Amino acid sequence: MTEVAGHAGVSRSTVSLVLRGSPLVAAETRERVQAAMVALGYIYNRGAANLRAARTHTVGLLVCELNNPFYAELTAGVDDVLDTEGFVAFIANTAEQPERQDRFLQRMREHNVDGVILCPAAGTQPELLDRLDRWRLPCVQALRFVSDQERDYAGVDYQAGMETVTEHLISLGHRRIAFVGGTLDHSAYAARHAGFTAAMRRHGLADDLVLRCPLTRRSGAEMADHLLNRPQAQTAAPTAALCYNDVVALGLMLGLEARGLRAGRDLAVTGFDDVPEAALSRPALTTVATSARQIGQEAARLLLRRIADPQGPPERIILPSRLVVRQSCGAPSDSLGGAPSPSLHHRDLS
Image (tube, rainbow, N blue to C red; front, side):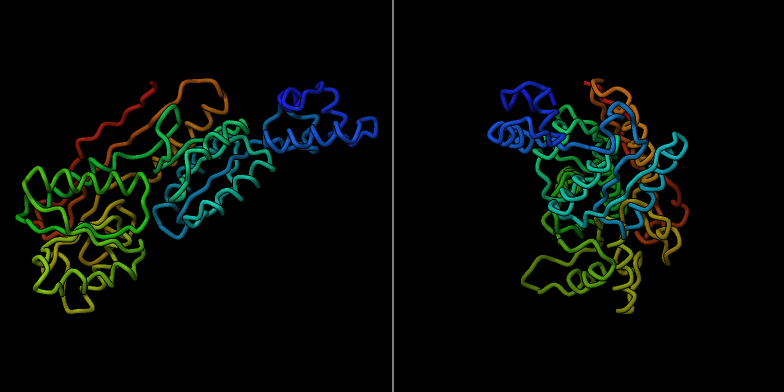
């Protein structure tokens, strides 16, 4: 209210009168105050007017692919922490649509949530974080970020994980490796692609075979033809496919099976995330474990710290990834197990 008063050039008591609809305020003054409220994004919460300092013990959780099992694990991790602290999450699926994301954030603000955990939809602009600052709504970015400057974030070292699995395929003798999956540009895609590129170039191998497709099982299955039936005028067919995530990889394995082929024998296939189904597929999927549930837990703890201390220094929590070798890459059976990527779990408080 003080900021609205300053913006409109009136006293705080005048703003209060306008909010209460008092007839004592002149029409021109009322219009000036209302214009200031719009400019500053001020919303008068009448139900909480006398409880302004109280918390609602609710937070918003916005994810971009609720149908992806990875996000189910992330949500479970968030709930693990919030439940023990007496908080409840409002969950929203943005479906990779920034405008839908904006609507959900506005609704959550109207419900006076204490903070939000945001996995930014592709195309989200950094201005959104500035707007949340103006709303005084604590925000933790999770899995992806639109700005890493002075912002809270919890995620995993995607680049190191993708480098590790690429190096593993190269160690098995593969020289022509495809990077498969992803149609949207965001920080997670950029980091995974960078890991693939770095490992391939380190060994003097071409990194040009990048096939983009939606992150669905059906699209993964359809990629089988693109990988195996390449025109002779193009470069040689790959012997391995490194998929953006497990959903695409599991779909690709089904596409191979429909053609009488098998992952690990006719084409090495790897995924990323290690969703529960990865270990149960046949053949079992070689992948990179990214600990979705733990990321959710860390994001929730970070948000609770930020709610308790709004002025504290920003934190970046980066969890390590871990290579999980199974049969789909064609590795010898005695290599089953997990190898950590060269990533460190760290908090950057600078």
